[in-house]
View 1 (cartoon, helix red, strand yellow):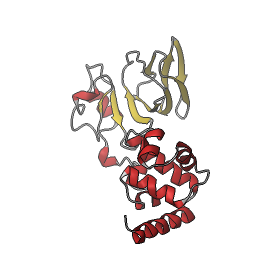
View 2 (cartoon, one colour):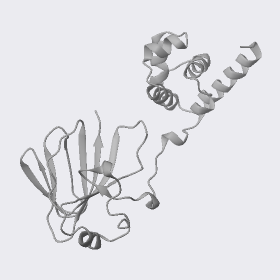
View 3 (cartoon, rainbow, N blue to C red):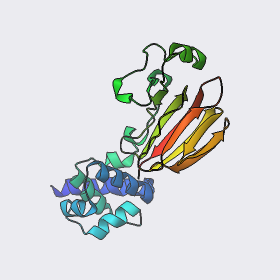
View 4 (cartoon, rainbow, N blue to C red):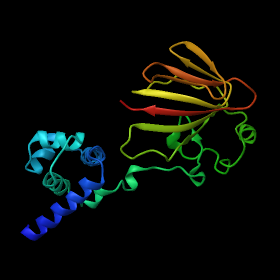
Length: 220
């Protein structure tokens, strides 16, 4: 790399360090490293830096502009990628993304195509005679994030389930019953519950109108 190019990169890195908080730079570098499946040791080796240099950079505790230049080169990204959040830092769900699937068989595809825009009672009528509960996977989920946000519309009691991590449930339309490890909790609209996902849990409506909950699973 020519000396002029190195000086230009150092100047660009210095500008980023001046304008963007160190902690933000560190978190962006860490997200990029993790998304590429690299350990701190592997990144340090690729950048010809000490492990402590990478730790200080990712923790935002202070680093030199050349450290940032070397790390970006090792990651194969331009400095501009660190200068701004980028689209990968934000995920938005729009109404046009709405698609109801079946809670226990999401992989089968859209549930009763054409019912996405129906109200809850019309959807209940369309699902009469079944034991189906509609689920909507919200697109406001970061590609490398740990949260899985979903909407679950409760027409019938669900089967018990378990999964790693934590789960937070907020009732948008109640009442609903959430059972965790054999203990049932009746929640009204606006109430919530959080529990370890490894504990057997299930949901059930408690009224004529289908319940609606926002469920956020957090992976360990």
